[in-house]
Structures are given as C-alpha cells and as structure tokens.
Length: 433
Image 1: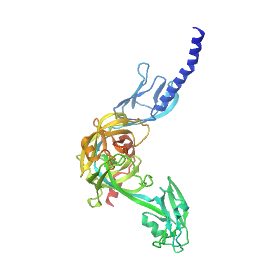
Image 2 (image 1 turned 90 degrees about the vertical axis):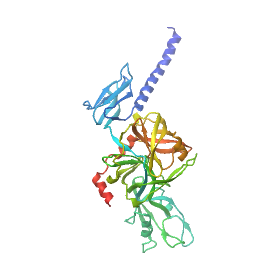
Image 3 (image 1 turned 60 degrees about the vertical axis):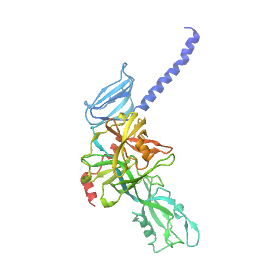
Image 4 (image 1 turned 30 degrees about the vertical axis):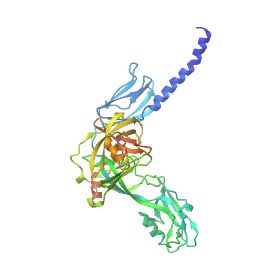
C-alpha cells in the first residue's frame, strides 16, 4: 500500500471511532428507562451484542433473549406480573443505564365516551389577576402588587383565619377594628408556602376594604369520561389536567364531583377558533362520582356504585408499544347523552419514556363528526381512542390552526394515575355526604 492511501486510512480511523462512540451514546440515550409490558406479551428492543439487557433477581418472571450477531434485538417475554429492576450493560458487565420492567395484568376496562359535568373546589382560593383600587382620597393603588402577589398564588389563610371561598377574603379584611392594620396572608406558590404582608385599601366606590385581587375558588365545565373499571368503580377522564383559565396553574382540588351531562348544542371549530360542546348538568340528578385526583394527565376518582353501567362492554388496554400509525376510532358524545363511534387516523406516535399528555397526533376522518363539530373541540377531551380492539389512549388537545388534528395520551399514563386511591368504603362515605 502506497503512502497516500495509508495517510487517508489513518485520517479516517478517528472518524470511524467517533461514529462508533456516537452510535453507542445514542443507543444508550434512546433505550427506555422504563418498559411496560402486559403479562404474556412479547416485546423486542433494538440492542446489539455490545449493549445488553441484564435483569436482577429474574426468577423466570421474564424470559430474555439477548441480541446476537444474527439479530440486533433483545427479546423480552413477560411471564408473571410485577416490577423487575435491571441495567443496560456495556460488553455484558459495565453498567450504562438503569431500567425497570413493569409487567401488568391484562387489564380489562369499559371505554366510555360519555359527556360529564365536572365541578371542583380548590384548596384555598387562587389569584387569577391583580386590579387597581381608587381609595377614598381618589388615589389609585394596588396593595396586592406592592405586597408581592402574583397570578397563580393560592391564598390559604389571612391572619390565621382559613380562606375557603372568595367571600371569606372580604369578610376577614373588613372585620378589623383597626383600619390601619396590615394583614399577614399565608399563600402557596409553586408548592412552597410563603407569608406576605399587605395593607388593605378602602375603596371610594363601596367603602369596603380591598386587596386589589381577582380570585377564584371553584370551576365547572363539561368533559368526557375515558374509561372505568366495572369492579372497582374507578374512572379516568379528560386526559389532561384542569387548570385555572387565567393563570394556567393546575388546580389543587379540595373536593370535586362529576355529574351526568346532556349535550344541547355544538359550537363548530374553525381555524384559529376552537369549537366547544355546550352541555347542561345540575345536582338535581344526584352526584355521578367523586373526583379524587386532578393531575396533568386527567381527573380520576370513583363512580357511584349504584350508577355504574353493568352492561358496559369490557376491552383490554393497549400500551404505548401497541399503538401504530393508521386507522383507529374514538367514542364521544355530540348529541344529547348518546355515545357514538367515529373514525380517526393516528398520524404520528411518540415513543415516550415518561408520562406526557401528547403521546400521539390524531386526525378526525369521520365525515359525520367533521360535519357536526368541524374537528376536535373543547369538551371532547377524554374521548377514548380504540385500535385493534384495545383501549390505547384518549383525546387531549386540539391543534388550534388545524382543528381536524390534535393530540392523544397513551392510556398507560392514565392507568398510572389510578393507583393508590382511597378504598371504596371511603368513597361511599363521601358520596353519602
């Protein structure tokens, strides 16, 4: 070999080494931290003979067939339920990444699609805006701004007195005998409790003392139930959390209820103008269920045992690994209280290691639904997505500039939120109150 060729090969050698390093690094980063499987299921993961999966204390819970020269995949065969810790190892002995394999039972649920009314009461009251007050001397001021309040703060107490609803604030600050007195306000901000000092201002309009705050303690609206477990009565709905409209802060609920709802009209979606389901509900028909949790991935709780649809058809759940691009269907309610089935297309699937309410992009393809709603509209959040006979997720968000398309969440992220509820006896006690 002549000298120029040797120099070329010598120059390419570091490049090949760099490619190998980049490949290994991307393989490690891309390998999931957590693998969810259903008992009896087989899954394969892109691996290689250099990077191998090793599971700890695996007493035949999972059969592992490691990658070889003939197959660049690691095969896992789930035998029993439970969680097993493991590692991704370099050359079979050097730990590169910790992982967990969760084997779930083949869970059966009833997909719903039912329109529900949602009423929740937050813990304390939430600041949704600051306002200017004209005092009795004609001077404009904002005590809340001067004291350091910001939108999203939750007011817990004023001078040691608990604040539950908006009117509590007015009552407490106008009960002081010394009008020059400042208030100590206990707030919660970003899960941290703080104490702010504020001096109320007497308004020239109604002579009441005020703080210069707009607040809210409760919220109500219409959404869609995703599924429920017929044996336990546990339900999941919405697929995304309930947040304050102005502040965007996830509401920390003190108590919440769902009620039977009836769709009375549809505000059709247009580009840059989200549509909406208009529904009615009230307490006269009784409480349908209790909300236990409001999370970034939906609301969760128990249905009244007497109101569970015992005839509801159960189907198995599908994990994110089951979701494929292509045809699927949703269940939703767009007229009265009638649940209907509509066709959609799953256009993109995001392979996620952690929970996220945007797991896939979906497109409405059903002409009847398009004619009625113009696409995905507010109130359809929570509509169950079914593919190949499995419940795989629910509708969560609409793309504002393209209402025919939106996002869906994997149902496995919703199932994670159902864990660790209070027991059914505690629920029955709440229903009776």
